[in-house]
Length: 329
Image 1 (spheres, rainbow, N blue to C red):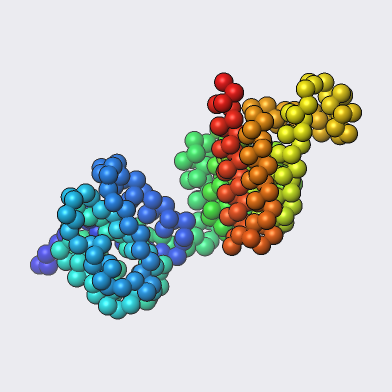
Image 2 (image 1 turned 90 degrees about the vertical axis):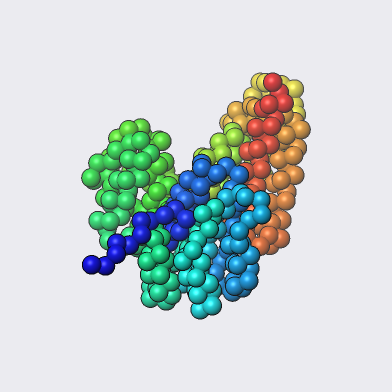
């Protein structure tokens, strides 16, 4: 009778499959678990492609300081043969003070490495492609449930039909629906939500940024970008919102009519700017104007990624507003 395989151990773990979101979550779960047990753990993440065997050996070598280490090697399906051999050799006698996670995107290439790790007792997180409509509907139900809500069958079907196959968008939409509509999400809630997202503009993003809604502004930014709103239009809307709030705050009058005449602005815009300016200091608005000016240059070519430039600016302006609020207390 063959000996039973060794029990899975957290010291060795393989994350395998085509679905990027599931792979990311699996690695994050290991990271959280390691840090709960070892708050001072050293974290290393290394891409397998082009990784010298010597560099991996240095990271896997016993630590002189005794701290636990988490080593994540990503993309091992692209690893050179020598690197695969090194990982396989290490797995035969793993360091008890080190957690090694290898991430494989699925397929036959370097499949032998995963088999060797499994034989050595590695735990395996399967992350298969969620390709069928039924699987995506099941995914949506789980996302809603994990967010503390429930979704009707027609609601789940409607959401998958509206969003499509992108799991990150499905997850984001599912959680936002629970936040917006409470415990139960049905097809009508999905329809109202999807119509609302379809109407996202740069000004929608700017409004959330100015009131300090970090989660909402980032969510609206993602929706705007996914729907093809130009980077320049979003940046212009943020700049306009910040400048208008600063202009309204600089005039010593709370009367919208007086402000409208002084600033030569429509009364509705003055009222909106007054609401958005609450919680801001003049100094904070001046800083935000500077961020908006940098963003304008970034989206016109100064930054390597306009998407990242927008997200970075949104986070910075929200942080400045939070600091302004603390300073006014």
